[in-house]
Image 1 (cartoon, rainbow, N blue to C red):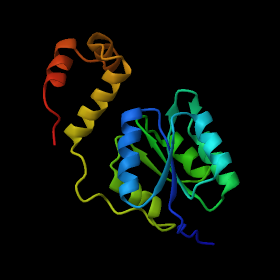
Image 2: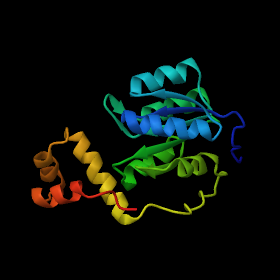
Image 3: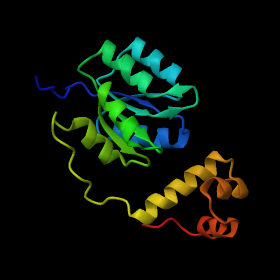
Length: 180
């Protein structure tokens, strides 16, 4: 049986990076979705209980748990819903697990709103079209460094240690503008 893309455009976004959450919510509203947001697994589960949306975009790692719990709860309440996992920590095992519990796709952060819409609305059995203008490898690297830098409380030494990078090299990267 082929799954049909829901015509109702309700969307739940569960993301603990507040600025990314706000940008994605605005972008998805501009694309015709009625957006509800949550910043934790517990808030996401409450939103699913309150009113299970047709679509969901859920971060894999959240402060209070795993985003897969939100997708699992959504699929139990509304089996025809379509959800995707967003993560900065992609690996094959979690991608397989996400698909097993009902996610329709798995996108690496930072994902652009057009990629999210394509993944949510792709027909069953078909992959979303590749993005017209994907981020360059340099831009993806820069975004990853910025994310770790923010997670380390903007501490250059700690960020350099976690990225296994020389501190001065990191300082030079942070001083430059984002690549295109």
